[in-house]
Image (cartoon, rainbow, N blue to C red):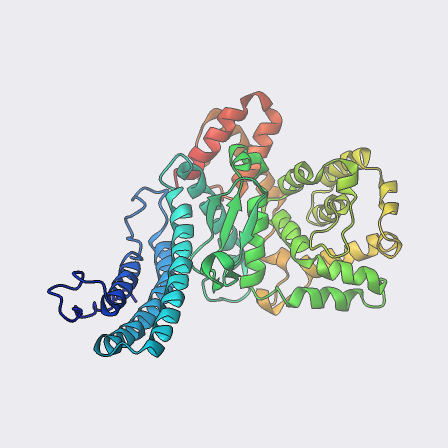
Length: 437
């Protein structure tokens, strides 16, 4: 994978004492091959200690995965350079003008492949290098939250399934909202190669305010849905359950929303009411934005995302919190605004919402080992008591002990709600608690 093709034997132009003494076709060929070999030599794999050895550094598994992907690009490049050398050797013996065309086409191809491989390496170098600087102490804790979400789901499955690895990897990218690149999805940045591990992208302002990090479980859940094989299954389940009960036009909308709705609902199961509170912070925008219905969009209309998740909260034992969230939401966005949505959707919303929650969270699935998602993982009143205690500890700067990492998001939100004047210390203690593990 890391082999470098042997350099072409020195070709001296006729009548010259050294290859570069007289410019000639042979010297031109020699130089193109030498340049290509140097391109390849510059694409060295990452060393496992290249980005430091602290707890913040990328894991060896992540570095090896990146190197495997880059190794495929290097191997293809080495093969083409070997072919270029054979052509060059033939041209050195006899400069046939027809063969120059083939060599130049290879030269262009090799240069394009080199640029593609450099972009791939630069992408990983960029996200791995973030662990060196001031962001390292923020990002490694986010990795731990992502891993904990996976552990909570995988340990709750009804049957053992192969362990997905490497675990999610977080990085900062400003200028847009949180997002994820799923394992196996082919990315332009990677030359249309499959992404080897889940990437969780977060903007700096979310990292600064850990009580807004409900987005991390949401993005991790997109990867869980994919790794569990529910990406294609769930929309079929939703459509089958709604057929004959909901207008077809509305069914099309709900099935198109399945990925984002599932990420919301599973996020709620992972961290409880704090997820809905965090969601409200995100989707509460000026009315015309929150009410905008996009017939081709994959995100549920913001106006209905909070009511959907409040349905789930009530079903898992948090009716009081759901009532408060929905009462506040309805004060900001009166229910009458739903009449602005397409009639087939608005008129069937309550029935469709109940079906969506039932199918997504309470219907047994083979993918979960015969369990329902809410049996695999579920925020409970017992978890709420632990979160309340952890919130008090975060305010005081005390250890949160064995509290699952994902629940620290809930604890940070509870601490911030009770002590808004201590935002800076709560944020600091949140990352200290996650960094101690």
